[in-house]
Length: 336
Image (cartoon, rainbow, N blue to C red; front, side, top):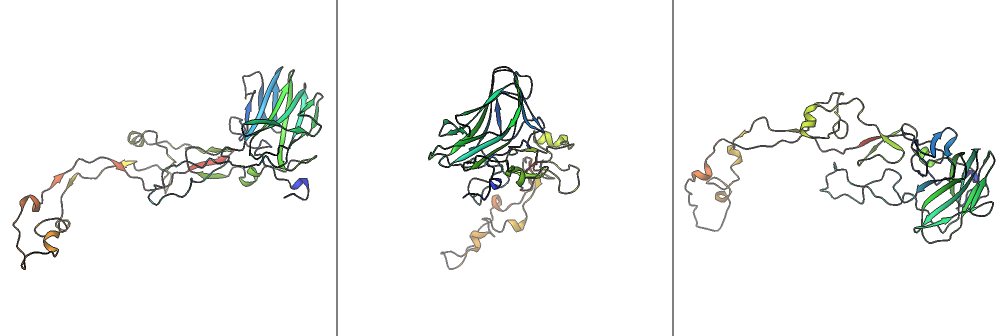
C-alpha cells in the first residue's frame, strides 16, 4: 500500500525526535555506543535541536534501534488457566514489536546539522544476524559532511530477503573533534528521494505525562515508574514482609494513611468444636449411623465411644497469614 504523498508516510521508528528521555537524559528506544552522557572522550546530550554528539578526535558512534525487543506494554502469553492466581506478576510476550520484512523496499532519512569538524554517516540493517549497509541516495554506502551545514541524507534498503529486519543502526565517524546534531529520524516503507519527518507514532498514542497501569516488575520503554512519593512503609509492614512497597498492591482504598498489616493471626488461639459441626462426622449420631445401608432389618444402637464423641476445648499453634485481598498488582508508569 502506498500513500498519496510522502507526507502521509508512517514512521516505523520510535523517538526519532528525541521527545522521550528519562530524568538522566538517556533517550528511550535507542542504544548509543561510542559516546556516553558524560566523563568520556565522546559525549552526547538530548537538546531542543536534537541529539548532540561531541566527538573527540577519531571516533565512531552508533545509534541503534531494535525491532525484536518488546517496545511497549504487552499482555500475558496466551490465556490464563481458571486456577491461575491473577495477582502474580507473570511474564510478558517478548515477540517482535515491529515485524518489518527485508523483502520490501525501505527508506531511512534524518536531519544532520554539522557545527564543527567533519564526519561520515552510514546506515545499516541487521538481517538474520548479518549486517547489511543501506545505499545512500547520492550513491555508495556513506555520506561525507565537511562544512557546517544542515542536510537530510536518505538511505535505501533493497535486500529482497525472506527474513525480518532485526535492527537499524546509524553510524557516525569523525577524524577530528566534531560537533554534530541528529534529529527527526524517519524510516518508512518504500523508496523516496524526499522523505520528510511525519512524527512519532509512539508519542502520538501515549501523550506526555500520561500514566499507564503496567503488570510486571518494570515499566516499558519511554515510561518511568512514579514510585512511592512521600509514602513511607510502616515499620510493622517491613518487619512482617521485607521489601514491601507502599503503593504496589497495598495502596489504601480510602484516604492516604497506610493502615493495617500485611499479615495477621487469629484474635484467639483457643477453639472448640460446636455440636452442629459434629453431625457430619463418624460417631453414634453421625453419617455412618444415619445413612441407609445393607444390614439387619433393625438398626443396632452403637455403643458410646468417648474417644470419638467427646468435645474438649483445645489450642492450636497458629502462624501469621496474608491479610491482603486478591488483587492485580500494577505499576504506575508515567510517560517521560
